[in-house]
Every structure is written in C-alpha cells, then in structure tokens.
Length: 338
Image (cartoon, rainbow, N blue to C red):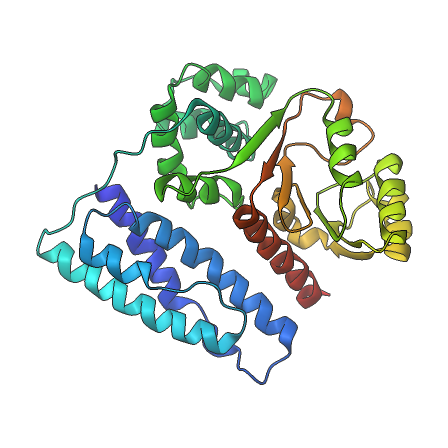
C-alpha cells in the first residue's frame, strides 16, 4: 500500500512542478504540443496508479477527467482538475479511507507482453548494477560476472518461471521508473480493464511480418526506431509515400544511421535525435493508419532479422492513438532541440 501511495505522491509532485506556466497560448504550436504531450505522459501514469485506489468518490472524480487535450490552455484546466483530485486523495489518506484494488486477473498473453517490457527495461541497466536491481525487485540474486556474460539471459533466468499475477506485481513495482512508456501504458490498461486488444507476438520472421503490415498501410506510417539501415524497408516506405501515404520517421543521429539518413531525409519527413538526447529513442515502434501498432525490441537494421528479437502487432485504435501521441511528442522534442 505504501509503495502505491509513494508512487502517487511522486507523480502528484511531478504534476504540481511541471512548468506549464513557461508556455502560453500565444506560443508556437509546436512548443505547445511538446509541453502538452510531456505533461500528458505524467498525467496518464498518475491516473493509472490512482485507478488502483478502492474509493468510489475518487473513481467518480477521475472518470470525469478528460485527457484528450491538444492545446496549452486545455492543459491548464486539466492541471486544475488534477490538483483537486490530489487534494481529495490526501484528505482521504489522512482519514485512512483508502484501500487498493488488486483483483485484476492477467491473462497469459498479457503477462507475456508485460514480461517483454520488463526485460527491455531491465536491459537498460548496467551489468554492474543489474544484480542489485533485480534483487531489489524481489528476483533471485546473482553476481556481476553472470550479468556481464548476457544481461538478457541473466534477466530471463530470474523471470521465466513467474506466473501471470507475479509478473503483474513486478510490473507495478517498476511502473514509472524507466524512460520506456510501453510497460506503463500496458499496465495502466490492464489495471483499468482496457485490455480488449488484438495482439500477435512474433519471435521469428519479424521482417516479413513488418513488410506485410507496412504494405497494408493506406494513410499513415509513423516510425520511431533507434536505428534504420534496412534498405528493403526504406524502399517499401518510398513506394508507400509515392502512393500518397504520409510517412514520417524519427531515428538517432549517429554513424550507424549515416548510410541511409540522407536518403530518408530526402524522401520523407525525417527527424534525427541528437546524440545528447539518445534516451528519447528507447522505444521502437511503428504506427500504421492510426489503428495498428508494431513495437518491440526489433530495430530496422540489416542485422536485426538475425538477432533474438521480438515484435508485437496490436490492432487497437486506443493504443494506436497513445503511440501516435508519443510519436508527436518525440518529433516535437527533436524540433525543440535543433
């Protein structure tokens, strides 16, 4: 219980401290978009945690909150509503009138997806610190030498046996602690019973699956990946752009991408993330026609198809909208940095 309240308190403080006042309705629309979507990222994590509180008054209050905002003035109104909710939570906490909802049953499919995100997040830790971090999350102990051999194997050996609800509990402990958004979003949907998703996970022939999905696009293809060197995929995007599909790309600005980045910039709306902001590109995803998302550990490189990678296709307008929001936030951040 205290961990949940600590997380809610931390996110409430982030909401209170978020510098919305630095942006006004008269500012550049791109600046407004960057502020709005950065603020929404915190708000969604906050509401995802608050939904676990078993209190009808709080649930009634947050049910009336509209997070479908676009401009900075709407963000001001949203913040005011959230401050009222935060005050209510603090009052009820003092009265000891709050309990946690923890009756959500997680299907094996959703648990597997949660575990994929857990592994991806833990892999961002250094091999030196990974054993201690895993142990702090309640996983079995190990040594640094084992972690140095393979971080992924180290993590898998400590999580492969977990049951669905154990995976959910681990995800809850990790919520809001990593730059990656996918774990928090999926967990929020699970806890709020919004997991009516058609999901297909792939472990082999990922490139072929990706080609099929991209080929089906009629309107929009938005790509955010760390590295893009696969000419087959680039040529396919070129053909789709010629058909009138809106193709936009966000990738890292580094030597790996240098072989294709000039061509991508020539033919598509392309945003290069500066090296100093590489953490922005922790996520790898593609939004297709604002109704399908393909995401996972798979980078769009020549070598990726030979690696041990994963990718998941999600058919969900709600999920596609969330990833589209994240894409807009990423490219807006890049615009601000250059």
